[in-house]
Image (cartoon, rainbow, N blue to C red; front, top):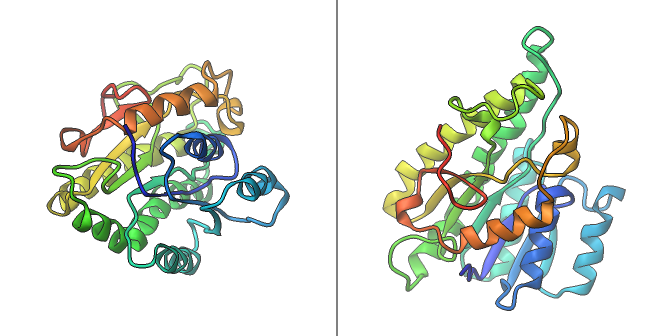
Length: 256
């Protein structure tokens, strides 16, 4: 069972991120600190997030733009001050974008924008919060690795699986597929380097989910509620044997 004291979620104002925050808050053993980050906490698209924060103590909305290094650093400083000497147990790198495209229509500037958001963003966020993740790991009394102790979960997609190319017949989205394949490699590298710190690193395919992004490329079969329920269960069962792997919402391994 997931039993993290502190969790940070990027891109938490809609879709998977918002539902993850909502279900975390409903848990009987909910985290003491839930950090919900998004680009524009004061904007109209963050209203649902603000409504949640108004009802729940211990939930903090923090401005974080994964494309902006100074924004990331400021968010890390805010979280550091907030946890007052404790660490961060779970970093959920969820913020991502997709731009409809085909091989012939793909533009270099669009590819660069998606790669910046979906790969470089999670890399920078992970770097900024690494001191807090290491602190959580060092101070934990648990053996091995777990998402309750210290973990980086990178939200990927089976669309980026070089073996499977999920939904190729529906949408080619070259920029998105290439960015998720790269994010998977980043996850492997993180797992290799952070093994010594006992920080679990995993790439997670949440399913093809009924969100703004999912709906933009077809008719997703899965509700966001069902996806996040399964994911919360899966995160509670991951251990050192899973670090550096690519799994789906149920914890089943997805081929690279």
